[in-house]
Length: 250
Image (cartoon, rainbow, N blue to C red; front, side, top):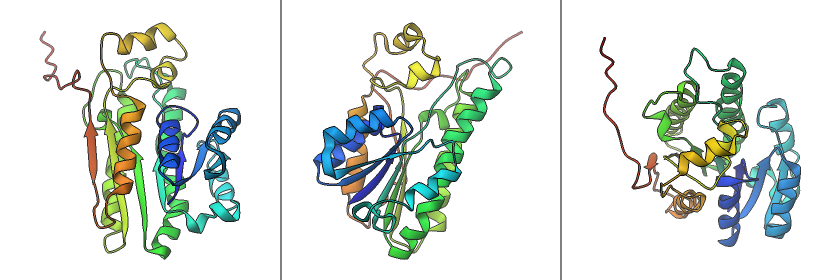
């Protein structure tokens, strides 16, 4: 299977790419950091093709995908893992940075739909393909400070479900993976703009999900029989659960 993995240079994307190659697949790893992709190429060898794309530079996505070499040619792609995404800030909506909001929308929504739009016609023509989108529990459950991040992940969930509605009758699968608290990535470090202490505090005293857990989930979905579609799958660590509604009394 030939799989495109966005956000491949670190975190979920790194572990997804590594596991898929270990299991005999070929991976086109998409990320903006060329040095990180070069390290991954050195590790995964010929089964991995590094493709430098900044997912916010929308015009470059189709051009670069359509210029892939023969062994990784766009019409041979079997699956897309839309993993690239980020959260920025945890301030309340009235104090949040508008630039942070725009960047989350550009990456989590615009980048995701653009690369999906580029590959979908090939999946339809070949009458096969799998799209795995990386959502979040933040798309299902609101929490203070999630504002636009949660909104982008709610979009990803609905986009995934509506893709399935549009693709009924084709052998194309669409899954939304919705992880909860997950450590071992740059997620919180990015969210807190490089503040390592704040990032570490998120996971202090908690056995969080790991990037390997998410990679195993992606691998499992891809290994299912072609007639099986997982619409959405929500994962949380045992130490994370739900909370009651917030009622503010005057």
